[in-house]
Image 1 (cartoon, rainbow, N blue to C red):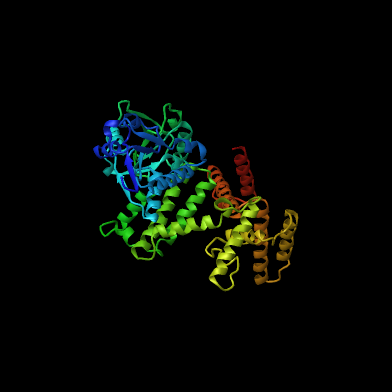
Image 2 (tube, rainbow, N blue to C red):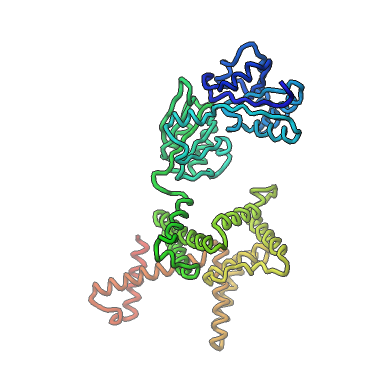
Length: 486
């Protein structure tokens, strides 16, 4: 055998699934290096050979990355020998074998010859056990990689296969990640020892995943697609279809400008659902708001301005950049320090663009005035331009009210009233009250109480115009009392 590395796939488990080429390579060699002996096919390999394994490294290293790096380095060293080395791995060498990819990369750097002897992977017998065709749509991922995420990198409208779900602890972590996308009772299937005599397929609900016995490195998880389309990709496809040449005439004629009122309307409907603490309404309204996002993104895509992925990539990069205490090595004491860091990072970004940039210039001018005032005060407070406590803020409100009363003309009154409102917003901030929401709720209370006055007047056979102010005041207090009792 010449110098170099020969990598052999041992198949999914049953020795009968070992390829003839792999058998011949192993049979002709005096020694074989196994990634692990913990694979069913190993006990059926040709006798009279020297079999070495790297199982001890798994105990020596803290992470799989360190294990695979150590194995790769040792295989490359063995490959430099005149007789080279044969390295055997479960399944197919290029399916779920991180050590193989590292070995191939190192060998390429050194100019060391390599040969990959393919084998049946775990995928083919798993497809047979499930009775599925991957061409119908299938995503494949590793359980350990999936467990490290907070949200799965999966399209729920496409079936998924999760490999190497090797114990209950890992299953618990995978379950938590999947539950951020799928409902707790979403049906799943566990496939154990696919293609072997003891093959087993269990049907269960997602929440039961970590309650299963017998999980090992030959266990896979199959996740069927959602019963109804529910992915963002499917949503974008529907919107693209509506905008297509043979789509909906109304949707096709929309522009960024024509959609502005709809975006605003849907935003306020989301706020109304939040104000009412109505989760069913919020679920629906968020979907409607997303429609506006997808419509604008689709129009931009059609006109060659940008794609939705460009917006998302920009947002992801910005969030990571502005949260170094989460994605980097910066430490923070509390939320206030987070906000100060946020403003500092934003200023640094602006300075890189050149010229002077105020920290207030990015505030959306289309915001309602109360919300805009709140954002102004929040930003300046982050850099220390703020009152030390709430008491002088309340005093400032009374001061502005007095100045409003003393104003001598309409222009002064308008200015002083603006200052008074600005001070009220500052007071709201100190008491952690959103003034925009507080005013919307006050509007709703007023409308409810006034409607009660109208109903009571109708019961008395009167119109509002026929009632005195004192009568209406009495009915107002009555409505307030009934609302308080409710």
